[in-house]
Amino acid sequence: MASEFDLEIPRAGTLSVKYEGRGAYFGSDDVIPLWIADMDFAAPSAITQALSERAAHPIYGYTLCPDSLYEALIAWMKKRHGWEIRQEWILLSPGVVPSLHAAVMAFTRPGDPVVIQPPVYHPFFTAVTVPGRRLALNPLRLEQGRYRMDCEGLERRAAEGARLMILCSPHNPVGRVWSREELEEVLRIADRYGMTVLSDEIHHDLIYPGYRHTPLAALADNPPNVLTAVAPSKTFNIPGLGLSALIVPDAGLRRALREIYALFHIGASTPFGITAFEAAYREGEGWLERLLPYLAETRDFVADFLGRHAPAIRPIPPEGTYLVWLDCRALGMSDAALKQFFVHEARVGMNPGITFGDAGSGFMRLNIGAPRRIIAEALERIAGAL
Image (cartoon, rainbow, N blue to C red; front, side):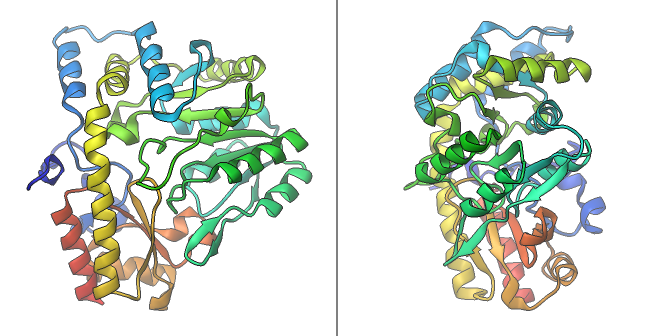
């Protein structure tokens, strides 16, 4: 029986980066675009309706954030993740990446080391290097087909003077949903060495059966050294509307962040971002509950297809996110040759693993947030090219 997520919605003419940015990124428009992390699914109808009602008023001026927006996020975090947060903890910004930059500038000085764990979302690197800080790399370990944190390495980085860690939870691109025990070890290390942790949890609602996301900050009664970045953008496919939240229980950290926000005039005043944010968290749960089984079936379909038709490409089973990390090392190609192969021979546009750091060499990132027929066609192209 057809699902609402099987509907193929043309995106030509919408200035979509995913589609109309293909030529610039891949050097070819003749690829199925399964790269940048937005989905090809219609957003929940409640969001579309709320935006239409707001658009009906013909003045789109600077807009205040209503208490009801904060209340919607607070209720969502309590119901979906068992974490009780307070309105005064919440700082709004145009996106998670600006929040990463703000945290690096607020809590470190030029030349200070900042821990990241590659292969990881590539803006983590620039959030550290652009403001003149130093990367303290603590690569993940791939053991028996599953990535793990190197906690001994993390402790060494902290002992060597790192005052900030940027954690990706769930992890993009490898799809790990960190266990409670792993997160408790991160907290132990952070507490011992006075290290602040910014936990990017933007994918926290996209969790597959058998796994559970635990907000890092929820593991401590009043975490003085943890900041949590969340947004409805990945969950409800509204990344172009640009509004996120940074949850910061500690008043001192909030003051430091507000100083950086004021320096760069970071704020949230777009009427459509505010409208969609609240509608998503208030009325989007039913849509999400339908989306998750669809994504899980697609994830399993990808693993089955590659196992039967392209066994040299081994997917690392994601525990969360709509991103599948493909181990292509058995193909014996360089990173440049891999990109060439997928773009010009298979005609499938994915993110090369090397863009997530040297630890991603030999891998590709596949976005499965699309109607399954499109995913199937992409896989058939890959198998045919091989």
